[in-house]
Length: 454
Image: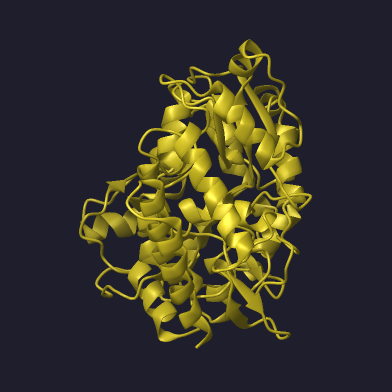
C-alpha cells in the first residue's frame, strides 16, 4: 500500500477539530483515570446502532470495566474520508476505529491495524466461531481477522405493503430492476415518492447503491489483468452507461426530493416519516423500520436486491471495530471491542435501546438469531436479512472479472477506488441534480478512472 493509505490511517488517529464527543469521558485528572482503569479514544459512524452503543457504554461497559471511552462520532462520508485521506496530524491517536471490509483487508495486509485473531481466539466470551462466516471473511486477510464486526448487512428492497396493496400491486420476492422501476413510477405522488435511492456523493454513499446496480447491468469500473491487477477503465462502455442512465432516470422520475443530497440517513428519515414508499438500501435499516418507536412498524415488506443480468446483487458490508497498530493501549482496546462487538452487548442492549430488540445490531452472529426476544421482534425481516447476507455475490459480483481483493460487491477492492469513487459520484450526483449531462459525467469519469492503470 502506498503512502497515501499509510497517511490515511494516521489521519484516523489524528485530532479532528469538529469532533462530536459522546459516551463516558474522563475528567482530565490523570490520577482519577488511573484509578478508574484508564481511558481509550474511539471513532465510530453516526448511524443509529452506533449511537446507541455510545449512549449505553457508560452504564454497560465503563461501570463494570472502569475504562472510560471517549467517542468521536462522524457521519458516514466524513468517517470514510478521515479513514483514507492523506491529511492530518498525529496530535491525537485513536485506540479503536470503525472501518469496513474495504479497509480491513488492505490495512491488515500492510500492517496498519492489529491482527485480532490471537485475542479473539483466546477470549471465550467473544465467541469467535459464532460470527457469520461471510462477514468474518470480509474483514479478514489470509484467514486472519483484522476488524470485529459490530453489525453486518447486505442490501435489499424495503417497501410499504399497504401502499402497494392500495394500488393493486404485488411485489415479487425476487424482483428485477425493471419491475421495481415500473412500480415506483406507478405509486409516485407529490406527497410520497415512489422510491428512495442514494444520490449523495461518496464512494460509500451513491457509490454503494449504484455499484450494485452497475454490477447487475453487466458493467464494471475496470477490467482485470490475469494477475488481478487493474487493466482498462470501463466507464465509457455501454453497460456502464445503461446502468447510470437507468439510475438517474428512476430517481428523477420517482425518487425523493433533493436526491443529490440523500444518503442512508436521509432516506431512513424519509421512509420513517412516510414520504417514500420504497427504499433500496442496507438490510440493517429493517430493524429501525420495525422498532418499537417506528411509525411504520408492521407496514413493511422486504424483497431481495433487484437484478438484471445476475442472480443476486446485494452488497456485503460491516461496520467493524479495529485497533490501529499505533495505539498504545491495545489491551484496553480489545476489552472494549470484545464487549461492544461480542454477544454480551447484544443481550444487554436489547431491553435498553429505544427501538427495542428489533433495533439491535444485526447480521454478525448466528446466536443473535436464536434469542427468543429477537426472533419475535425481527420476525418480519430476520430471515430476509440472513438470506441477503449469505447470497451476496462476493466471489462473482457481476458478469466480468474485476481487479482487487475479494468480497468487494458495491466497491472495488483497490486503494485507488476511494478517490475514483468519490470524484465520479460527484459527477453522477451533478447529473441527478440536473447540473450536468450523462455524456459529460461519463467522459470525465473515464478519464479519472484511466489514471489508475497509468
